Image (cartoon, rainbow, N blue to C red):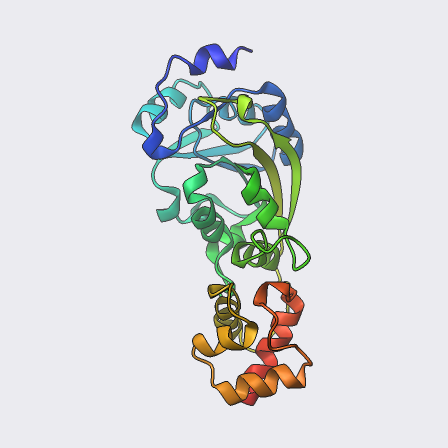
Length: 278
């Protein structure tokens, strides 16, 4: 199937971050990872020219294709499938719970809105009953390779990789990189490589905490000023100096360390202890 010949008939819109996936092997990998059964519902974000969509409808019970671009909506409307419903909308303004439960999400998303989309799908750290997350069982994304590395990063990874996105992804899901996808797999070709990432959604958060909103505030403090040590970062985030110093001392954390060297579990412990010391 010559996806390249089909794709080059259309002018991709830079303002929407459009790069059409034309690599049949990459599409096959996405389908393999999704492993769709004939009683399952699939939500596709950013269907584009419908190359993946036309494969999804062959197996899924129902496919909801959410697409923002009017031109792409007209194109995927040519797919003749009774189980396809096309929704002309912004995914960031779409309530996923309307599509059912245990849905599988597939998306080749624009690089510039990757983080907002992941946050929309999973909910924030302290959003304990997020309707979108509660409706999803699995997410398979095509993202920039550097973002893929951030999703699975931990405190032992390079500091530029480990951060708030890493913690959010791992707090509510089990992220894994499936396959690196070279830039030539797209038309037009982006300047960077991509990766297929699978996020298996977890119904329970990674950590059991007394106050998740407080934990989120501590997290932001740890990563907001990467050049500052953990002590100054937390003080700058609005926490009392004496409570910060006592907490770091209690947990035997060197106050000159930076926040990105602390694991998710250690930051959780830090938040609990700091809350008690305030």
